[in-house]
Length: 78
Image 1: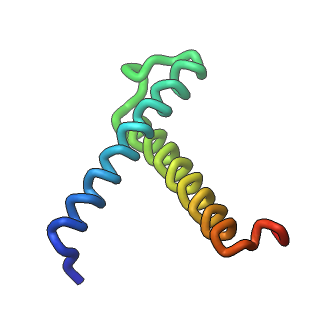
Image 2: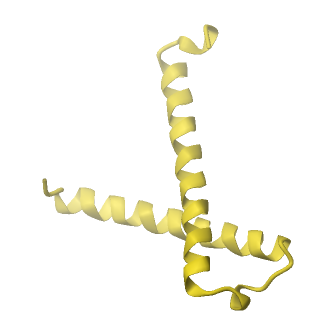
């Protein structure tokens, strides 16, 4: 299934923003661990960035579900 060009560009920008935020979070995580990014291999860096991306996407999904529940008035029972 091919996405329309406008939707494809939106998802690409969305993915880019998540990637940038994940890189910043990964850098912070590396610094807090007392290491330098240059000390890690490219594969190790990619794993750390992927973990951070997954965390960000999870938070976005969680907030989306909470917003949907609030919109439907389910906040009183959750």
